[in-house]
Amino acid sequence: MNAVGFEKAEIAVLDANFQTTEENIFTLEGKTDKGATRSFSVEGLTAEAVKQFGSNIPYRTAKRGIGDLSATLTAIDVPLDFEMTILGIAKSTEGFYEGGDDTEAPYTATIFYDKTPQGEPYAIALYRGSWSRNSLEGETLEGENKELPEEEYTMACVVGDDKKGYGIAVGAEQVAALRAKAFKVTPSGGA
Image (cartoon, rainbow, N blue to C red; front, side, top):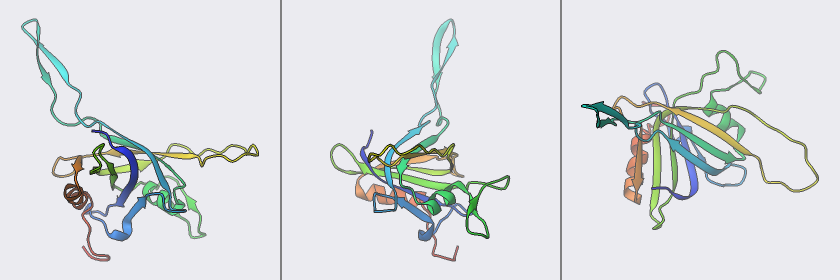
């Protein structure tokens, strides 16, 4: 099932125990100067089925597990602090961001939200992975108003200790339960 539109994305930075706090959950939902979502795609939901041959015929298919789970997020006007945090790019003592050999994106959990064609809440959560961004671009102004440039991020996902990589929910109660599983929220400053 595909969502109808793309209302918001939430990305939680996870600690060493794969938990988060409300302060470490970032939201893109179209609020002024806080960024907005444009599109998402999730790949690798299932393993690619492979035919196994026996007795000179296609005998069975091997189809267990998930594939190479990943997500692509396209957004506009993403706040710099949000972007640098999910990419693991640290702020220098002088106050600017810089990347180098020690740059390491943190593990995050991510949820994409919208509605089904019937108008019910819909969400897909990716339980654990790290975000990357391949490039920054710029181009000259040509004297006319232009849309904000799109920013594209890629999440490489892994499965958790329970061997699960993602969840999909439809309905308000199920979406809330999915959020609780994906974002194991602890009180600020505590475990």
